[in-house]
Amino acid sequence: MSASAPAPRRAVLAAALAAATAATVPGSGTPAAAAPAPRGAGGSGLTGPTVDNRFWYALRHWQAGTHRGTAALAGDRPALTLATAAARTEYADPHTGRKATWEYATWTSPVHRPAVPATEAVVSWNARTPAGSWLQAELRATYSDGTRTPWYVMGRWASSDADIRRTSVDGQSDGRSTVWTDTLAVDRPATGLRLRDWQLRLTLYRRPGAAEAPLVWLAGAMVSDVPDRFTVPASVPGPAHELKVPRYSQEVHAGRYPQYDNGGEAWCSPTSSQMVIEYWGRRPSRDQLSWVDSRYSDPQVCHAARHTYDYAYKGCGNWPFNPAYAATYPDLGGVVTRLTSLTELETLVRAGFPVITSQSFRKEELTGAGYGTAGHLMTVVGFTAAGDVIANDPNSPTDDAVRRVYRRREWENVWLRTKRYNSAGKVVSGTGGICYVYGPARPSAAQTAALLGVGLLAP
Image 1 (cartoon, helix red, strand yellow):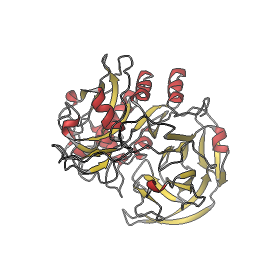
Image 2 (cartoon, helix red, strand yellow):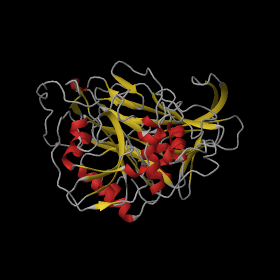
Image 3 (tube, one colour):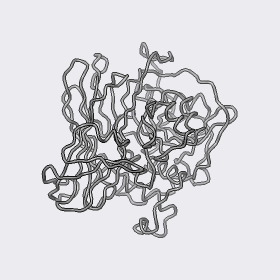
Image 4 (cartoon, one colour):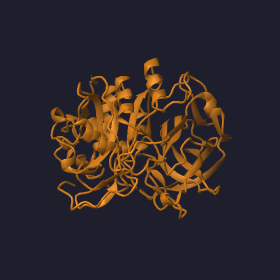
């Protein structure tokens, strides 16, 4: 999202990652006279779990569930693939007008009952889609009254844009819940209605008779029920630590490739993704970058924007599309999640994980930012001795200016709150701790411990 333009969808969500391993289970200005905060929306502490993650990635995970033409593959990175076509279908791509026939197979996960009866759900997947293949991810939930949602399409995705255009699907609702681009949300959570349990369905497509098919290494969802709050309790700073993460500015790309969300000024999400991908030692090849104008600096940022672009949303900030892009690089994984405190974020940074966070704020609410935003992503790379946040903020004029230090208490609140006042004094959504985490598919023991500690892997 742009750091200055209003967010075109609810700013209540963002993205992160759980690394998979076969060996481990799992606007600006002053607001108008502010009205008092609604009851129950103050700075009280959380009283129970608010986030639940469930991802499938081990061989036994893929062997579970219901297979209809799919198969589980063993190996260093177990995967789900299309083994025998279950049927054929015709898909008319709404963004190109092209029709094509595809054969497909499906895998339906076991039912997962989270520790958190949820108001929102975001799906993640890590996959390889060879030329002539793609996948669709769907989610179905059971409400707390025992009735079910329909199967909601949470994304149609391919790593390339040659066969289909990756896309979210608009207009999905049953009158009780709605899919907002990439997020399934209960329409009226104040009524007490929640998502009690859920299932994931993956449909893998390939050209009829093709030799290669998609490989899915990880899939699952994060669900949450974060209470309304304008402020959050202050955390106690941990030790100082800073990771050496490449620094890229989205602003140097302003005007480049406007077909992808009007160009670089709106590329905070893919720019942040590219910083972390390169931190982990991955990078697109010269051949992969050959389509980028040779006069452009940092061509890999243009590449990331193209390969995270959602043709329905018309932007590069689709939550699951960013971790899915990161996972196209060898032995790298990523998921969308929420963290519940700055302490959890510090745990990940100390274990070597930069974390891509989403926040929204007025200009005066974050000292040193110099802008206000309805939704913007940056990469947290460390903490000072005083506990202040060190971030690679892509909304900077140059690559050299990307490193920023933000006051801990200010940054903590604008990231974790779910309600805020905009520049007109209106109550609007906050981001509630959503973020992306990317990391190695086979994490070290220390990395695994950190992922376990923040609930991204199961014990």
